[in-house]
Length: 288
Image 1 (cartoon, rainbow, N blue to C red):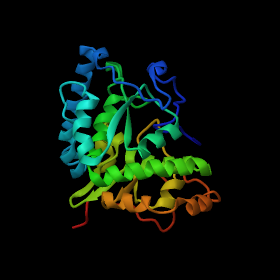
Image 2: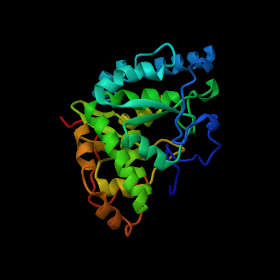
Image 3: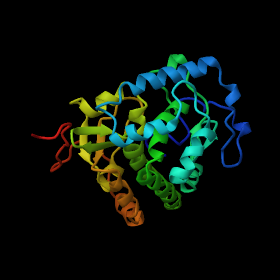
Image 4: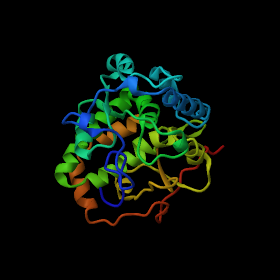
């Protein structure tokens, strides 16, 4: 996937965790709920409590409104119990996967409104940082906004677009859009910037940093600029892209990306944290 692995590609740091022998040809598997130990549930409970306490004033109002639909704070959720609420809400369903899966399979699942959730949870030693996504990142970070109809439609459109990008050899460009929206996106609200990206919302340390630290660069989301921008996988982001509302994402997804990919093939990548001439950074708080 180009310069850096992304959340749905194969990790370069260590082998994926989980038993892939139990996965079907599309990499999905049944959630083995009985395999979770009390220590696993305690880890979930600790992560959920810690992260929930940090949301006020930092997470988007849509995320906060949708989070109760996840329905489990004391124990790891059953996928089917979440699906009983998610299917009638937006037509999505959760499917288990043993770990990271190839990008085309990831795109295909999204295009079918099936969201792959890693079914193992991190160890207590990994509470603050984990290389690849686990069940807490996937469920807490991603799933609440799948209950929002606009974000739900964007995710399906992204999956369909990913399949086309794979045919055109442009998955690295589209991966950057995913990274800077679904994983590390910020949204402008009346009282300042808020997080809607799962990578931020599931991180105890990056949540406050992303919306209030003076260090990173924050720019309005524009497709070409976003797709040209490299990102970090080993540290806080140096650049965040800001949307005005979730509908903006869905509007972007309706565009024909093929001409865009052709133009970008001749353009150099931009290092994270770079402010180009003429660009104006987005302030963390509205001017009064």
